[in-house]
Image 1 (cartoon, rainbow over the protein chains, first blue to last red):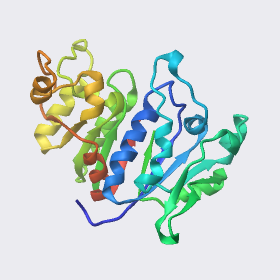
Image 2 (image 1 turned 60 degrees about the vertical axis):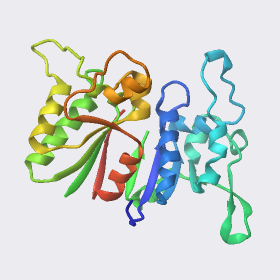
Image 3 (image 1 turned 90 degrees about the horizontal axis):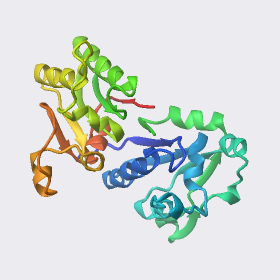
Image 4 (image 1 turned 90 degrees about the vertical axis):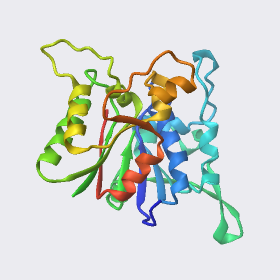
Length: 136
Length: 130
């Protein structure tokens, strides 16, 4: 593997069960975590529904994969950007989302929030700083 | 420039499969290097040799196979996405007890690590999808 460290941003734009993009995006994030890159996730548009809490999928015959997002901290994926406008446009608030955290090894393993709420303009700047953007 | 390409949509259903091919060909024709083309989501369906499009239409899989032969292009189909959708090479078919394989010439099946590696090593990773 390469010693290069690049900034990877995974942009999640679609609702979790209407198509397979969300699930297969998560699979890329989990595999990619093994490569020790500088990883961030962004949830925009209907993608914000991917991390909505209280998902129940038994009646549509699909696996509820939302618990996996809570494990991202263990994969050292600690920067999760949620676009404020996307939440507001869908009548969602931060309380409707999963509480995603990580243990900060540089701060005596204190539990910290992974989610950062950013405006559309701020997210645009974050995208501008990336080396690789994978959009799902 | 060293480029890597990701193809996320299936052939004929979505123009991005065509666009990915046309971009790749144009980049090669203009002297750029394409270090890898990675097929994901329904994009793995570009790699089946069992497609039989009408004769007056383009055969996207065949176009990729020919481009791969000409330029020694690395066409990688994601194994996890391929298994869901029934894209198999001989090893995969044997491993899962299936009666045959369908991977087209020039394509190979491998893991998602190949996508991340392509993103790390290339100057640009260009994603084609919905």
